[in-house]
Image 1 (tube, rainbow, N blue to C red):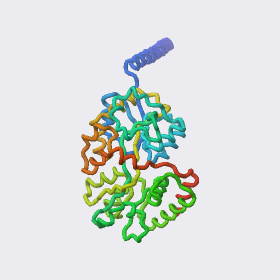
Image 2 (cartoon, rainbow, N blue to C red; image 1 turned 90 degrees about the horizontal axis):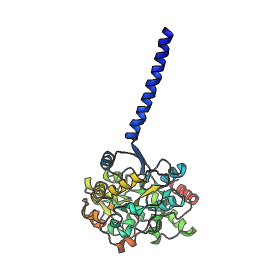
Image 3 (cartoon, one colour; image 1 turned 180 degrees about the vertical axis):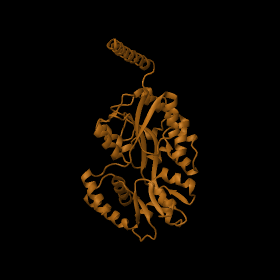
Image 4 (spheres, one colour; image 1 turned 135 degrees about the vertical axis):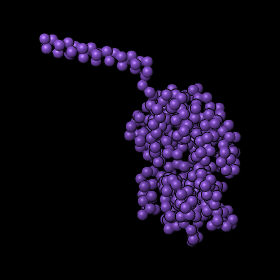
Length: 354
């Protein structure tokens, strides 16, 4: 009798398990798993509140994978073949590097609500002539942030002179920590162009940077504004957003824009490996809405890539004025690019920092 009940109990357990399995499959059919996408981006480019709103409205989970340089992003994507990433936010010159490695998917412009609103001067640049792989989102200018109490008006006529001038400094500076940017900034100061570097020009660049080193408080990728705000140095080289943001809290900080300088455009691109294009295009169409572009620019002190958003950004008078930079002045700006192969760049970098 006991064996009979044991057998009945066993059969009952199997029936219950089978019913649970069937029931769970029906639930899965009616309530499919939440979609998850991963965005590779800088740490201070997307508003967390905006992302939370999009997730709640669309039933999507968004993971953020941060990178601290375009080179780091390139390594991440090459290592994985782009798998595990859906939307990518690289800077201008990195677009060509990623596209050449076949790590980006072509953009279907017919699925974009905002393409006609993109500022024409940010489109068709050399790194992606037809914008097959990239959409400009925000842009910045490189310049010099200063503690304006330290310098006379005469000293401010040429901002690059404050950074590279050979006269003995009685103040310290922070310099960029990216070898590509450092070499190109020095090239622009010395030769007024960044087309190419022969052996003699490279030696001049290296000599300039080695002489400059004794005045450099720190080489930093980000947060040079911290050194300025805490009065640990008098001048910094940085992109506009960091300096304009610091200005809001520290009125003694001033942003100087040299006549010749660099522009950097932050872009949206699709990973070649993404399988969530429907979610990405929905996210892009939301992100590029005028009010959302404006809120990001006001929060992070960027300049907008859309024409309509320029009328709605807050920020300082200087930020609003630069957001309306005309195409003629924009055409005189330079883009960062690799002037040297990687081995030469590493050698120069090592000699400067040693």
